[in-house]
Length: 109
Image (cartoon, rainbow, N blue to C red; front, side, top):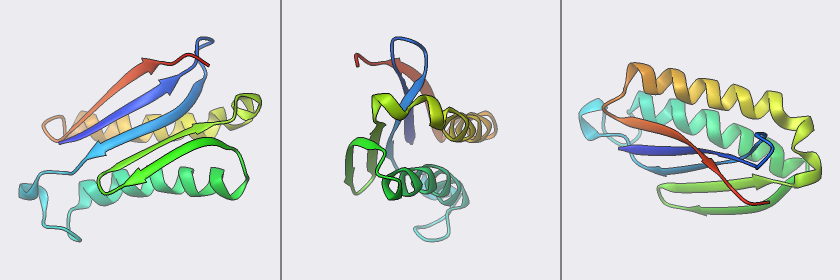
């Protein structure tokens, strides 16, 4: 199961993304799993772009886990990008509810 969280600040702006887990093997083996590829492409592309812009406040990466937060003073400028990722994840969760969950989490800061 893939667990995703849209991290939002107290003002309701998307502050970052947390992604954990793996797509079930019945949807394809490693390297052939289309759901995993779709989720990874969405989140890792946003993460890589934000990192290349020097806009990340923090990031944690390990096998099956990625979490990143955008710097507070830059969040407003990246809301469209982060909203697109949120929309994509929610779309995938709608069609693959047995394999991916998505929830909002309010963070301090």
